[in-house]
Image (cartoon, rainbow, N blue to C red):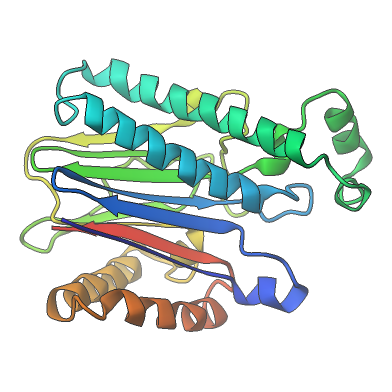
Length: 267
């Protein structure tokens, strides 16, 4: 198994001086591979979403590593229980991480000036978590199991051993245009969607922020992009990640103009 991840700041963010609000990470071991992507929300009121996405990815990666190290390739717990237990643990630990970030560096007047009056009141009432708002997609692959979890927009696209594409994680209809579900939502646990397979496992798995989806407006065009990408990994594995990283600025500039993160696992 090979895992990879790439991120690139969006063309529109470069234009206005915003930081990259995406973050991605991956890891591969002898027994499993993990890939994670998070996309911090772009509106001004989410002024620490770049930190929120970074902390979300770090938290999910750590929790999945701990989980995979303590279980027999995800087969020792009942399906529904461990999925929601894992999501709840990620939400809780991410909450602790953003609490620590705020404690280490309190909100500045410049940051608070980006808020509307009702948003300032939420912060004053102690309901400030939204400023770190972010989506999260994570996938894991072992020899016997594929697992995915997702809150928010972005997509997971997988290919089987015959090259047939699919989206194993169900779509959330509440994610529409600039609207998305988020780790910062009070009902975040109920908004997570999952995929779990033990048969006909995918051999190429990709996850990405919505900067990719918005560039390729239809699933057919999205599948064509990922099909080309998986073939690149097959034919030029040594340069595939470098080539993808160099292509992302062009994708953003000619497409969504948004930050773009892609991560994946190749068998």
